[in-house]
Length: 235
Image (cartoon, rainbow, N blue to C red; front, side, top):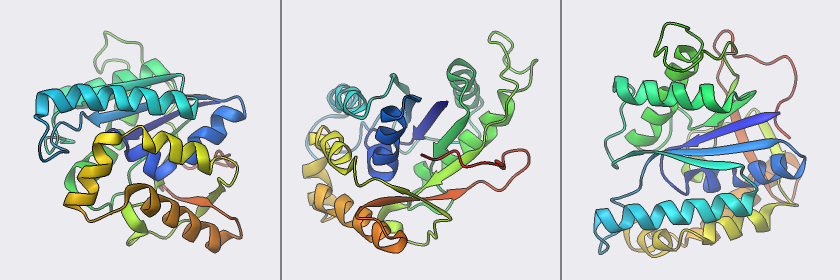
């Protein structure tokens, strides 16, 4: 199976579904990771142009730890993601055509900031556009409109999972991948008053309590035709 996970910023996938992606890879599935925004504003001191490069390297290192086959960036500046940006829709459609996923994981529509919400909607729009032969015809249409799963919101606020993945065997991989994002550990402590690694581990433990596992990640489903699967696609 081919899995495409699309987060807004470098580190969002590691937070929301890193354990699940590592589990997919361990089971022999092909995992592709992508982030839409380049994370260039996520620091109080480091300048955006420098931070962009730092976060690109952090994302690549984290992807290697999780077992991703490739890590992509659409390289949009922070706070500039829009589902109405036709260039961005075309780039996302091209990414879907390139990776040909059986399933997509992305942000939930009730996530905590605009860029995250817009990323999820962008994926929804592009997943249909990628199947239309005369849309951006320089790349071949992908006939499947893949099922979409929504990963947890930050801190699980206003999110009720309908599916869980036991990540007890990959929690350390998830945390190791998160630790690659060194630029964000200090930023989140200063800006959000969050101990990054402890915060994520606590959320995974909470989801685990809900489903009888030591650690887990929770997911919602995009309930829109024809994206509703008839079998379980999560590991």
